[in-house]
Image (tube, rainbow, N blue to C red; front, side, top):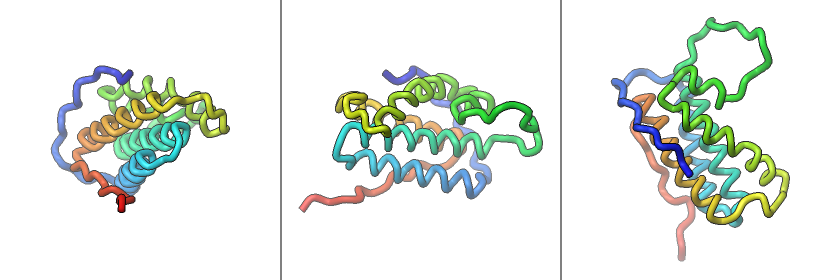
Length: 150
């Protein structure tokens, strides 16, 4: 179940750090990998990691350098995302809640994820990546399918 969040208002196109653009590209490749993953666990892991990279792109692009020197333990990107982009707060909570399931799938617990959950997460991650691109004013650039039938 994906959170019901209105799309953030598109901001004017501005310069986005190359590192943030690289994370968005990596997220797109992760979604392509998820689409062709042979099992639900692999699909779930790839989709969740793609969403994580998209969130990291927003945090990278929006974080203000020199503010908030690290005095506490490192935080996850899901904790940082609502601070730099409040419009994505519910998405951050949604994906943070799935981190344990991703860890179980990565650990090889095959029954941790079923096919329906993996497909749902893939769709949610695709939506989230599009929202992240919109928030950053970056045009969406879906990848062509990596594999072709034939």
